Length: 70
Figure (cartoon, rainbow, N blue to C red):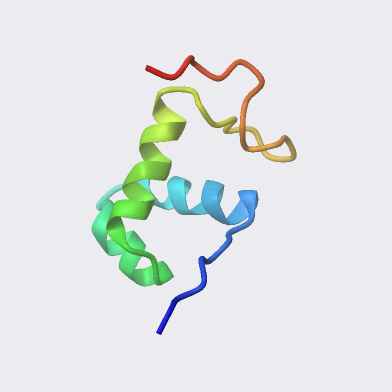
């Protein structure tokens, strides 16, 4: 049985990442609450921290000046 890949809106991803920044929260718990695998949310948080994603609402999630691939 194959699983189809889930797609999330930019707003959902930004809100999930904001929830991880709340006091007394952690990525694993936020991910479980949202029905995500914790590794998925950790990847999103990491991408935001290194500047791959644009944190500003209303803009495309991927920034124009993505760092080069290594």
